[in-house]
Length: 90
Image 1 (spheres, one colour):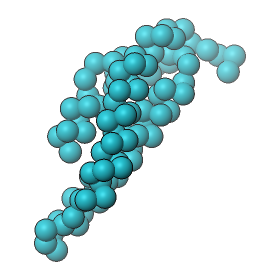
Image 2 (tube, rainbow, N blue to C red; image 1 turned 120 degrees about the vertical axis):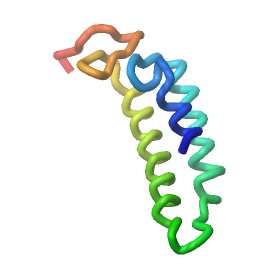
Image 3 (cartoon, one colour; image 1 turned 90 degrees about the vertical axis):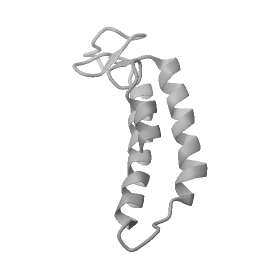
């Protein structure tokens, strides 16, 4: 979880968005999803919830990054450096 937070919280990914940084973060999250998430296991009967929460956070991060890359405008808390204007036409 701390690794995922370290990828999502820095500048140019979460608050002010920059395409190159979001793409790099997405590549890292895809690697987590493909290679590390399948290996998450609960060591005992008390840890399955933590394993599922971690998997869900990885999926959520991937969805947020893909949606942010898809948007080509800035609005409210979604500010893209490449697209600083609001696009009311679309």
